[in-house]
Length: 267
Image (cartoon, rainbow, N blue to C red; front, side, top):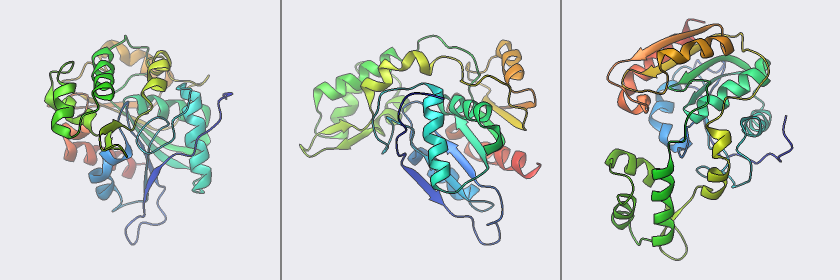
């Protein structure tokens, strides 16, 4: 699939509650600059009915930093993790960039995907849209703040939205020099950004059951993108969550959890 070497991804593995051990597991893949940690409250809900695994993609969270952000490359990382965990087949949920990873996984290795849930992303090429975010993170890297308050002030030089700054701050950790440092591989992410905004990898449609969840207040899955989605995901059902933006799982957590549960339970 790709010449890039796979990396050993960090993951959270939450076993199913009693009585649900036989259900196919759910694998959760975060979006750009996110991490598995962002999904912990959701994992606790979904583990009532099945084992749940949330992972950190390369250059994110606690996973290693490495060159290469092609979707086929990230799929190789995910498949290596599934093999490591002896998971032959799973329901796969991906948000934003993670949704494109999930679509690529379903197209490249459909035999490993019991169903696909794509959260607020379409399988299309997007315009550049993260220059301010990258500038904010670079400012923090250069400014070496001593605490989160100072880090927020540096982020605010480029990002007005406080919710966005709080999200970006999840990528900060205190290092050995006692300053707030980035834990993401920002240089690799920036150099691979052209691949990130591009279409998912794979050379065939995914014919399995698919749910596309989109935020009613988000522009990421506009109506004019749906034909492309259905060409790549012919069995896709589209559900719109009201009063939700791009981070629909944070804006409407209960509705999001219930939509995912209902889709999987109906299979």
